[in-house]
Length: 141
Image (cartoon, rainbow, N blue to C red; front, side, top):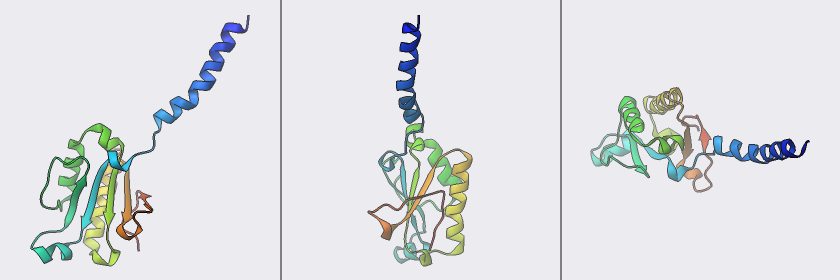
């Protein structure tokens, strides 16, 4: 009497953790979108503008830094869903290299991504390769 039902319950008991892992997979940086926040004053040394530079792996656009958050969001929305699901990974340099306006751009990008349910991770370049990634945080001292 319990034989068939018990087998079904046992199978569900074994498979449930697997389904839970698949449903909430940890994002993988190499499968997401990697950006570097280039400070304006560093970019000016080569007569360029600062902003977000796309460093990989999903590169549809090479060239100058994207300094506008709306333009960056359009780019993020244009990449494959599988890449967006793995998040946006932003590397920044020493916090004193950025103006308050530049720090605000990262915060605005994080907010815009959160509204679209895209996870954002930030890390100071000097913390690499240990990868002290922080989710949803702007530039920190």
